[in-house]
Image (tube, rainbow, N blue to C red; front, side, top):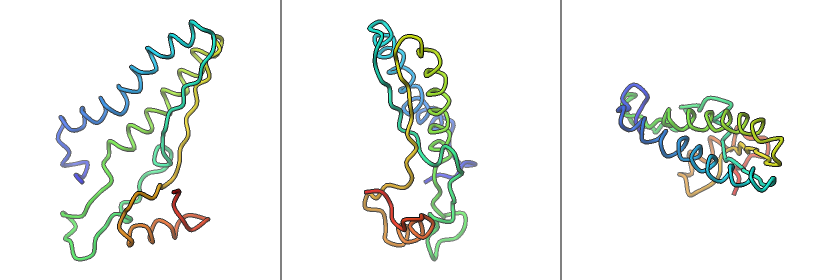
Length: 132
């Protein structure tokens, strides 16, 4: 993964276009139809990293120099934080039109990550495990 200082502007723009602009466009079109029908639900998927910063130490690999260590991309937290803002805005914008807009912010979800990462993250979770 690319650290914030090394992230090309094109990659920043692409990540925001997919993760945030995409959600905006879907919400705009579908939400307008829901508002027209006076009912509907939009559920955005944010992340715990929309509320807390990623602990980059979780991603570190033994034996790699600091400048080669993997990092959680800056765009992930920015997009997920933006989704919370979009959710809050749309929730009030369409509230009187019967459209409910919410977001969930799950923590780590297991998806075949390396065992050392899973162990480090699980140690920080009260249930000592990632979501499945």
